[in-house]
Length: 145
Ligand SMILES: *[C@@H]1O[C@H](CO)[C@@H](O)[C@H](O)[C@H]1NC(C)=O
Image (tube, rainbow, N blue to C red; front, side, top):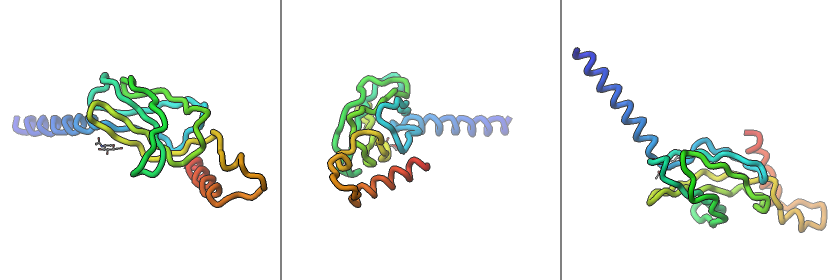
């Protein structure tokens, strides 16, 4: 009987640990690279999955992100289907923000590929600027992952 009680206490401690983890508002399993025009599923966990979340696309330095677009303000159930807009410029400094009530969290930074690349289209010679080389190698690294 004593053993049974101990085992039961252990099991309920484990259950509450799992429950506590799933209460944190956060993205799950995001990829490092998205391509414009290609639909993708953004997954997340939230304290209450039936309570709508707002997902915002942002871009820039991690401490100083610009807001690009609100993707949805009514996602529920832990996932949202997103097709990156064809107009989004190529970049390796995008991030997603998720908001539910007073809670807010961010994804890591990721790349959006396949969109317009203004610096390439304005090039008149065949030379590549160092900024472009950098962006290209970041993209390649993430593709390989
Ligand atoms: C934000 O998400 C990370 C995982 O991406 C998680 O470790 C952290 O606890 C979350 N922060 C908040 C305030 O929910």
